[in-house]
Length: 313
Image 1 (cartoon, rainbow, N blue to C red):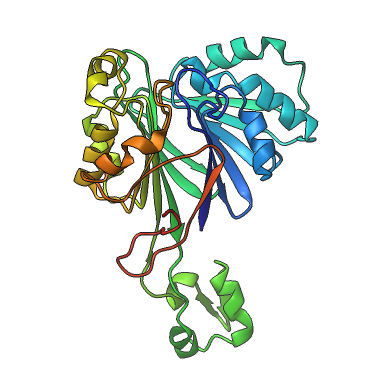
Image 2: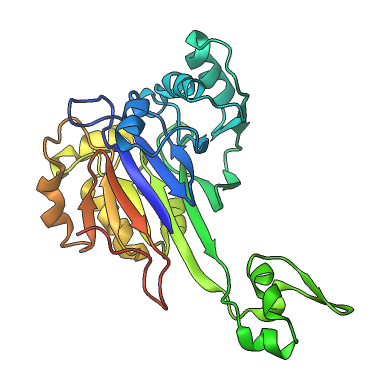
């Protein structure tokens, strides 16, 4: 399964009940962050999932509401006793931005490795996830969305194991991915498994206008987390000027790409209650919700053709 927490759901400026952009994703006890707005370390402390288990961070872009929490986060990792390297990925300009933000950070007990990706994005493997960074349209600012895929192993087939005369004592090793020897023969895990099973796909993308890459990488996901920067049509001039989306536009992407659900985040300070615009948005895509700061969601492996999650209501 995959778990995540919307640590911060605000855009541009923090307000008392809404922190700035950050998503905490956890798989089998290891975790990553997407974006690190001001106060992200406070959200992690409230959540209680910990700092030591963080293996890395993905940055969508370098506007302040997405990255000004980096220095504080690194200091919290230091205080948590970290000694293993910490990895950060992002669009071009990453080194200049992180080094600038960290002028106030003293020497750390761990290395920070910066991975600057090309304009077309790239592939990342982290905490058991296969992650695709893809470019989106935030005007002239390099900006990525992230499609995260948690694969699921094929089912162990006892009948195949018996037919190959594999002792039951070796079944567990095969299930754990090891190859075993039976006499002079090698038996691999693929020899004793059935068809591959459907994994879990989560897409996170904010700070963009609707675009072809967003449609492409949102296709058939279990859950989309997209921005709902503005709630009403009268905000369209601001959306066009600032390269953001309305609730309606995010829902139209979901209607086209047919995920299991749509969770809206990254709300403008002009939106007092993000829930206010959800009923109308559901006329476009029914399975739409507004995220809340500190909300946790569990995505479980799907059965058959079903999508992977049902935990929001």
